[in-house]
Image 1 (cartoon, helix red, strand yellow):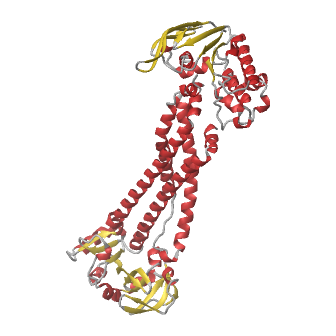
Image 2 (tube, chains in turn red, orange):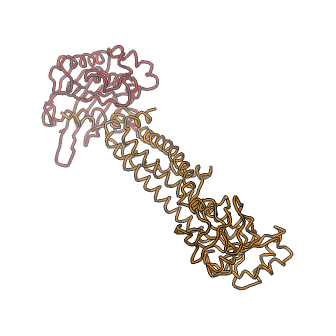
Length: 208
Length: 357
């Protein structure tokens, strides 16, 4: 369960990007955050994913106020998976090593089976520059799933993909959601709506 | 190992760091070993055959010292004196060679120079060190305003002597207008060196008498060389450090996404700092090894360069290699502190902002 209570955020004084946003997301929910550029959805996603501290308000993750978490790095590693618009794979590590970098020791044994599930096992020794954009995004997805996170945050995960690869990514996220992982996706792409269990439209820093 | 992979992926920038460290470390090695070599050669010249050295009081450089050679007669009469000899050290153009060391010695010290050809010099004659002899192919040589017959060639383990000319002390006295630069005295009984030193001191108010060891330890010229070497080595160290810091900063800047993703994946700041330190240490060990081999090669070549006449010499001992190794690692770590700190502070939010919708 994710709970946002009266969140406001300013990047600079007098430039408020989020206005008193409150929101609850249930465990296993697939939430689609939609909205135009500048609507505040990336900021909201950053706050939800603990990458950004809100100027006001509180974020409760699994009953814990994020402000009270002492080791946020460890918390992130234990609970959160990320998928970004660009794959952000480390170019000097191969596919397997990129996932192993994120994997906790106990999950390293699952890397190959995860790659198998995502249909990219044969790419495990290849480097990011040796695979296609769609394959890279699947690797990024594998990296976000490896520690079996409670929540996956995806920011424009299909922004650099064609429709075929976009569909594949959405289906993989949906599978994760069906398995009990909470998925939050911020995107312009309205085709994601059919996979979502809940859609929130943002406008001018507010939830409509 | 992530650090090794990162280095191999950033080949050009890694090469720049490698070169920065190599140049700095080679400079430290060469400056230190050559200055130690100079000190060692001169110390050996003084310490070889004497326990006590007599120089002119108040003159800090043996080149300018003038000691009355006649006090040798009294010194030789002391019960504890084993032997004594006098030396004049000077420098002068020798034939076409612009400058070379000239050593005027008393007869009893000539056998210190191991003849490889010819005879020891009489008045009006000189013997040449093997190094300088390679550049002089005549039977006589002009030193100052006078021509001297070359009576032989000698070898010496001391580079200064190998590149110099030895003559009778009387000839050297006329050439440099002095009695002797210093007198060296060997004691029969090492336990009575202090007593002998006191007796010699009482002979004249114009002389300074020291054990050769304390002379070498206190010799001003050595201190100047050591301090200069330290200053130049420190500058080389700082330049290496700045080189590492600036190239590392460039690397860190170009790898911000990488650090951002590590932070987003929950890797701690310490993990990033450690990896950057590993990269620096790997680079510094590689560069140190290369610099060590390069410096040893250069130091091997230097004595064979005829124009240097054997005056420039040096070697790297285990102690020096160890201290420079520690300096290299500290230089690499110090140069990486700020870039590593900046990298660890990378905010993963940049990953979202780049694709900001």
